[in-house]
Image 1 (cartoon, rainbow, N blue to C red):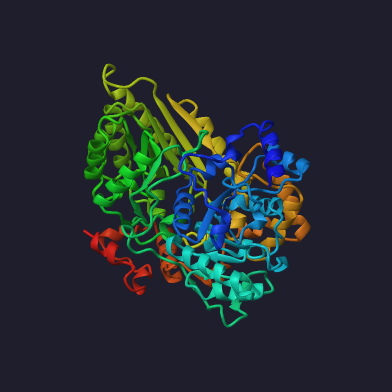
Image 2: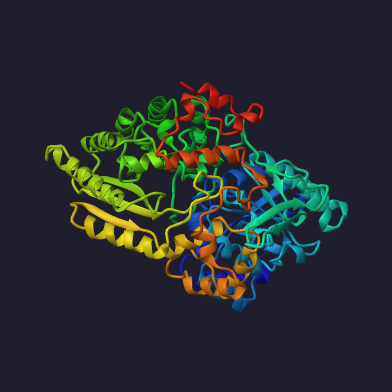
Length: 621
């Protein structure tokens, strides 16, 4: 171990960003290896800067480490320079805390936040000297688990992951760690551990299921092949956020990360029902943390970290029922300590003016709004539930209040979209620009900057648009050119858009079945990794992988799914019924909206689960 440490130290002198690998951050947890019976390696399948910005990592890291007989250490995807040195020095992928090799751990857990990180999972397992295929792992190798939003379609990774944790992880994680610890001590074969895990609510073990297909390639059925496996796996749902675990201390990175601040999760879930939004479906119902609990968490986190910015985290922070009271209380609590409060994920129709005025007392933070579509017709199709008037009112409030920069998020390629909807994006950008100049010159902040971002629509599982095809790459590129040419003449506007090839592959992976595993393996063999980074991503290698495996990516991404087609993820129960999703899809084609869940139950299916909707019911007005 001392020799390995010495070699790692020499490597750190040669890489671009050594703090990605050094560890030793303030509040990092270091436990004696031999004093615990369960060693858990939490793996974020991307670089340190991205992983250390992820709240879920911090929650599970703290949760497992608070258990007396368990430890949790972190693994991140190394950059290419570090990988080359690791190969040269014969160093396996090691944890940040103790620099232990991945294979030494009893359990390895990957968080699945983004489909295009899947090649990183395979690379991390390879670097960690763990067999990539679940079926090939020996008893002394780690049990490899995964969770997160992408786990709601686990099939693309079914060949590689031993068990998936579906839904909220705060409670099921400890049940899984204890089960693995007990199995480790039992001497039973590896298959028995998988059977024990399959009996835990919210855990899916792919090896205990068989997939059959129709002649046309669509899925016929996913059926259990072992008595331990249930017909359907129901997601875990934390019903009370106040009593749910939340870390009161977090590791503070030595280097800059994407979100370098306290993240205060004020609520979970969303009641709006946007039809394109997977998170809005998967994290139902809405659950709020109480104001006293949030103030307690905020105080302890600020004391433990010293951060000067705090982000109120949720899918739609402007919908938190006590938002103005919370902001006033936070600013009062931290008066004199120069802690600013930022409000991400703002709804255009939320009551925000008072909140914005409160947050500007310390310093201006960026304001982001998401109209998503350029016309009211298309916003009705996607059930966005906001109007142009909502946007303009909030933008005027922001410019009058001293902001000069606004970010506007849109999607292109949405179902039923036409060029008239693209013209609507340009029209909105022009109106926002004019609103800035309507503020008297002596009263407005300098430096107008309107960032218009247009991502490409990706049809996602467990959404009303799961049946829809994605636009072809050629059509998405045409729409991007169309917007670019028209927005370049709008004063103060910067136009950003996503690579169509990456969005195309995201659509392939997000709706893929178990056969995709061989494509993923082939892409890994061809050198695909770090696909979310444009300077490394190779679309050509991915196309080669599909060709080598005899599968057509267009069939996965750009094909309309049949009304009665069995989806590859049908055996995973999100709590939302297929019939509700189909009703919403059909309403979208009629341009009909659905009310906010706070204004009445829309029968999405969650009410069939006892006690789950109690808090959401209490918030209805």
